Image 1: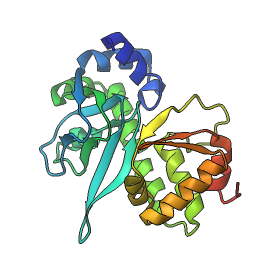
Image 2 (image 1 turned 90 degrees about the vertical axis):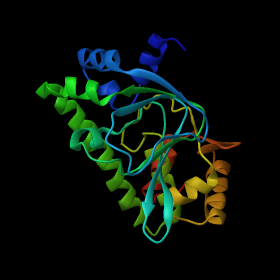
Image 3 (image 1 turned 180 degrees about the horizontal axis):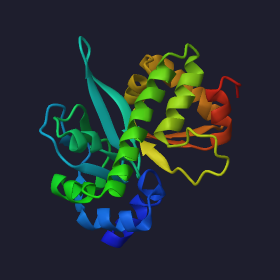
Image 4 (image 1 turned 135 degrees about the vertical axis):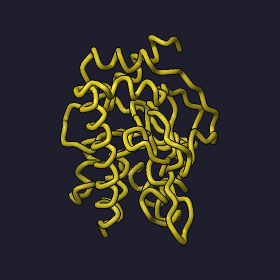
Length: 232
C-alpha cells in the first residue's frame, strides 16, 4: 500500500473522515507509517505520554486493567479508528494497553506533531472531538453492559465495534474485523459458551458472518433492531 493509498483508507471512515480536508492533510503530513505484527504491543498502560495512532488496515485490541481481575479486552478497533489523544492532551501516562489483533498498519502522529497542530484552536477542537468520541465509546459500553438482555447487549457491542451504532440507514460497507470469540466474550461481559451461542444464533439469522478468527456484519438494520430489543 502506498502512502497515498494509506491516506485514502484512513480518511474513508471514522473520526478523520468527518474532519475538513485541510486538517486531514496537515495531520497526515506529520504522521509516520508503522506496521505491527499480530499480537505485538503498540503501547502499554503506564507507558509515558505519547502521540496519536490511526488504524489504516488490520484490527486493534484495547485492554484495560481491572483490579482483582487483570487485563480485560474493552474494545476492538477497525480501520478509521484513532486512539491515544487523551494521553497527548493531558501529557499523562497511557491508561490502556493497545496491541495488534491482526497484522496492522497505522499512522502515528508523534507528540511533537500533535503539539504543532494543537497550537491552532480550530485544530485543537478537532482533537477534542476525537477525545469526546472515544469517551462516548466508553459510556456506550458501560450502558450496554448494564443491559440484562444478553442478545441485545452483544448486538449493540458489535455495532459499536463496526462504527454502526447510530441510526443511519445508509451505511457504507463495514468489511470484517479480526476478533476471537474469547475477546468478544470479554467485551460483552459474558461467558465463552454464551458468546458462542449468541454468535451462532445471529449468524443463523443472517445478521453476521463468522470466519476463522474474524467476524463481519451482513444485516446492520436487523442487528440494530436486535440491539433495541426488538428481536430478529
